Image 1 (cartoon, helix red, strand yellow):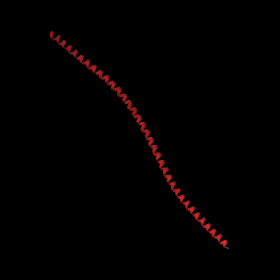
Image 2 (cartoon, one colour; image 1 turned 180 degrees about the horizontal axis):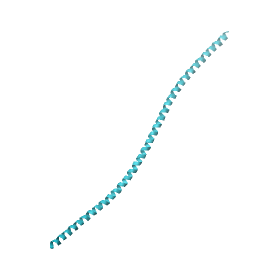
Image 3 (cartoon, helix red, strand yellow; image 1 turned 90 degrees about the horizontal axis):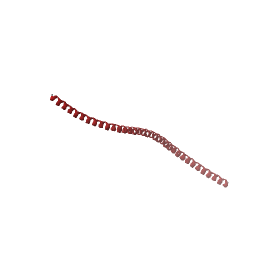
Image 4 (cartoon, helix red, strand yellow; image 1 turned 60 degrees about the horizontal axis):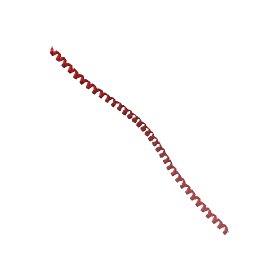
Length: 127
Protein backbone atom coordinates (compact mmCIF):
# COMPACT_ATOMS: atom_id res chain seq x y z
CA UNK A 1 0.00 0.00 0.00
CA UNK A 2 2.83 2.37 0.73
CA UNK A 3 4.20 1.57 -2.68
CA UNK A 4 0.88 2.53 -4.18
CA UNK A 5 0.87 5.75 -2.20
CA UNK A 6 4.42 6.50 -3.32
CA UNK A 7 3.49 5.76 -6.92
CA UNK A 8 0.40 7.98 -6.63
CA UNK A 9 2.51 10.73 -5.00
CA UNK A 10 5.13 10.45 -7.75
CA UNK A 11 2.39 10.55 -10.36
CA UNK A 12 0.91 13.66 -8.71
CA UNK A 13 4.34 15.32 -8.60
CA UNK A 14 4.98 14.36 -12.24
CA UNK A 15 1.52 15.59 -13.25
CA UNK A 16 2.07 18.86 -11.36
CA UNK A 17 5.50 19.27 -12.98
CA UNK A 18 3.98 18.59 -16.41
CA UNK A 19 1.22 21.12 -15.70
CA UNK A 20 3.79 23.73 -14.62
CA UNK A 21 5.89 23.04 -17.74
CA UNK A 22 2.81 23.19 -19.93
CA UNK A 23 1.78 26.50 -18.35
CA UNK A 24 5.31 27.90 -18.83
CA UNK A 25 5.26 26.85 -22.48
CA UNK A 26 1.86 28.46 -22.97
CA UNK A 27 3.09 31.68 -21.32
CA UNK A 28 6.26 31.63 -23.47
CA UNK A 29 4.23 30.98 -26.62
CA UNK A 30 1.91 33.89 -25.75
CA UNK A 31 4.94 36.15 -25.18
CA UNK A 32 6.48 35.06 -28.47
CA UNK A 33 3.17 35.65 -30.27
CA UNK A 34 2.85 39.16 -28.78
CA UNK A 35 6.44 39.89 -29.81
CA UNK A 36 5.77 38.50 -33.29
CA UNK A 37 2.72 40.77 -33.65
CA UNK A 38 4.70 43.82 -32.47
CA UNK A 39 7.53 43.05 -34.92
CA UNK A 40 5.01 42.44 -37.73
CA UNK A 41 3.49 45.88 -37.06
CA UNK A 42 6.94 47.45 -37.06
CA UNK A 43 7.77 45.63 -40.29
CA UNK A 44 4.58 46.89 -41.90
CA UNK A 45 5.42 50.46 -40.88
CA UNK A 46 8.92 50.19 -42.30
CA UNK A 47 7.58 48.73 -45.55
CA UNK A 48 5.06 51.57 -45.90
CA UNK A 49 7.76 54.14 -45.22
CA UNK A 50 10.03 52.46 -47.76
CA UNK A 51 7.27 52.58 -50.39
CA UNK A 52 6.67 56.28 -49.65
CA UNK A 53 10.39 57.05 -49.92
CA UNK A 54 10.67 55.11 -53.19
CA UNK A 55 7.70 57.06 -54.53
CA UNK A 56 9.26 60.40 -53.52
CA UNK A 57 12.58 59.32 -55.00
CA UNK A 58 10.85 58.47 -58.28
CA UNK A 59 9.19 61.88 -58.34
CA UNK A 60 12.52 63.58 -57.59
CA UNK A 61 14.19 61.60 -60.38
CA UNK A 62 11.45 62.65 -62.82
CA UNK A 63 11.89 66.29 -61.81
CA UNK A 64 15.66 65.97 -62.19
CA UNK A 65 15.18 64.61 -65.74
CA UNK A 66 12.84 67.52 -66.57
CA UNK A 67 15.34 70.05 -65.24
CA UNK A 68 18.22 68.42 -67.14
CA UNK A 69 16.18 68.55 -70.35
CA UNK A 70 15.32 72.22 -69.72
CA UNK A 71 18.97 72.99 -68.97
CA UNK A 72 20.06 71.30 -72.20
CA UNK A 73 17.45 73.27 -74.13
CA UNK A 74 18.60 76.53 -72.55
CA UNK A 75 22.22 75.66 -73.31
CA UNK A 76 21.32 75.00 -76.96
CA UNK A 77 19.50 78.34 -77.13
CA UNK A 78 22.41 80.13 -75.50
CA UNK A 79 24.85 78.66 -78.02
CA UNK A 80 22.56 79.61 -80.90
CA UNK A 81 22.23 83.14 -79.52
CA UNK A 82 26.01 83.38 -79.11
CA UNK A 83 26.48 82.38 -82.77
CA UNK A 84 23.82 84.90 -83.82
CA UNK A 85 25.52 87.59 -81.71
CA UNK A 86 28.84 86.87 -83.45
CA UNK A 87 27.16 87.15 -86.85
CA UNK A 88 25.50 90.44 -85.86
CA UNK A 89 28.81 91.79 -84.54
CA UNK A 90 30.55 90.91 -87.80
CA UNK A 91 27.75 92.52 -89.81
CA UNK A 92 27.92 95.62 -87.58
CA UNK A 93 31.66 95.88 -88.22
CA UNK A 94 31.07 95.63 -91.97
CA UNK A 95 28.34 98.27 -91.81
CA UNK A 96 30.51 100.57 -89.66
CA UNK A 97 33.27 100.24 -92.28
CA UNK A 98 30.75 101.01 -95.00
CA UNK A 99 29.54 104.02 -92.96
CA UNK A 100 33.10 105.33 -92.60
CA UNK A 101 33.76 104.86 -96.31
CA UNK A 102 30.48 106.59 -97.18
CA UNK A 103 31.25 109.43 -94.77
CA UNK A 104 34.68 109.83 -96.35
CA UNK A 105 33.17 109.79 -99.82
CA UNK A 106 30.53 112.33 -98.77
CA UNK A 107 33.25 114.62 -97.39
CA UNK A 108 35.26 114.31 -100.60
CA UNK A 109 32.19 115.04 -102.70
CA UNK A 110 31.38 117.98 -100.42
CA UNK A 111 34.86 119.34 -100.99
CA UNK A 112 34.54 118.79 -104.73
CA UNK A 113 31.14 120.48 -104.70
CA UNK A 114 32.62 123.45 -102.86
CA UNK A 115 35.44 123.55 -105.39
CA UNK A 116 32.99 123.38 -108.28
CA UNK A 117 30.87 126.10 -106.66
CA UNK A 118 33.92 128.27 -106.21
CA UNK A 119 34.90 127.80 -109.87
CA UNK A 120 31.35 128.53 -110.95
CA UNK A 121 31.34 131.69 -108.84
CA UNK A 122 34.65 132.75 -110.43
CA UNK A 123 33.24 132.23 -113.88
CA UNK A 124 30.11 134.18 -113.02
CA UNK A 125 32.10 137.06 -111.60
CA UNK A 126 34.18 137.37 -114.80
CA UNK A 127 31.28 138.21 -116.96
